[in-house]
Amino acid sequence: MTLSDRDLAFLAFEGEWRRHAGAKEEAIRAEFGLTPARYYQVLGRLIDTPDALAHDPMLVRRLRRRRDDAADQHRSRLGRAASR
Image (cartoon, rainbow, N blue to C red; front, side):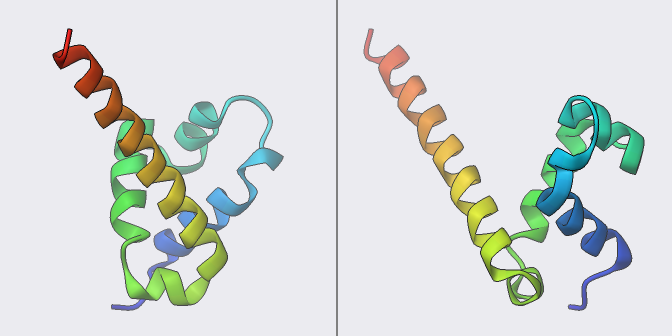
């Protein structure tokens, strides 16, 4: 698989999104015309590809860690709620 222009734009955006004025969600809508939920679905699949990892290993590893940490926190909250 080769990275598309859109894939490269997603990775560039994630690397530099703080440069955009306003909230990240607003920047996602303005830049890509996607809802934030859809953007994160696509980004999640993208960062699991070997091509994305080869393109920018530090960024992709950081994004994977952030995603995995969020999933762990979510599971932890669900576990605590179920034990009540």
